[in-house]
Image (cartoon, rainbow, N blue to C red; front, side, top):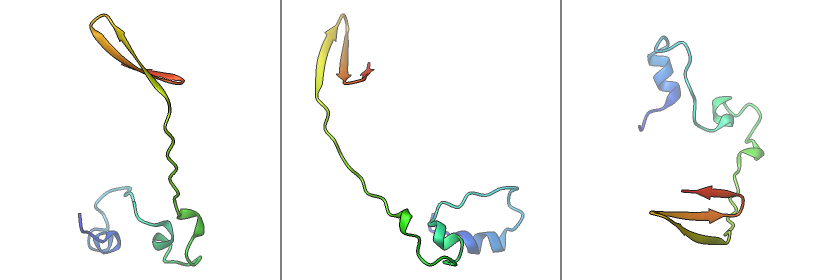
Length: 69
């Protein structure tokens, strides 16, 4: 949206009863606790084996622990 949350709220203080801030928490609190270390995200990927089961008129992908049809 290319809109700064804080500028928008200053210009429209009564826009809604509640608003949602989706930025960094340390920015929301104006870095009062310095930079928060726990906001760093580390993604891990894992490939699971799969089998294809062909039923009557349907194709099912079967993953360990779940069935997607």
